[in-house]
Amino acid sequence: MIAFEDLEPGTELPSSSRVVTREDIRRYADVGGDRNPLHQDDDVARAAGFDGVIAHGMFTMGHMAACLVWWLGDPAPVRALRAQFRSPVFPGDEIVAGGRVRSVDEVARSATVDLWVRTSRDGVEEQPIKRGEAELRFDR
Image 1: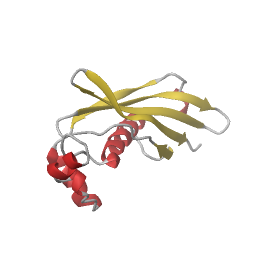
Image 2: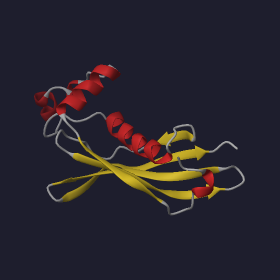
Image 3: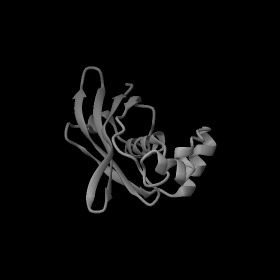
């Protein structure tokens, strides 16, 4: 588990990767209750301008959050989590989450962590989440 005293600006989080499957998307829709056809039906997704069904943005953000909590070893310090969704994630995409400690406040025992999710498609890096951020606070 990460202790507050171990945090330094510039510290990199270990990256975490996974390949997104149609089954992941279906299960996320079942659990979350979001059965938007963009996530279920290739024809509907194509009509909306995508190559096929896309993963839920919150699925991608969940992977980012899991990376952070795995590094921390405990979800308790996480006080806020924000993300800007920038590009879709498709079945078969390998998404890689990671981050870096931006700042540490010794008095407040808090830290800000920049987070991201990346994928590579046809040799081009995409950033489904380009500007993620976590606010952490460690109790004494």
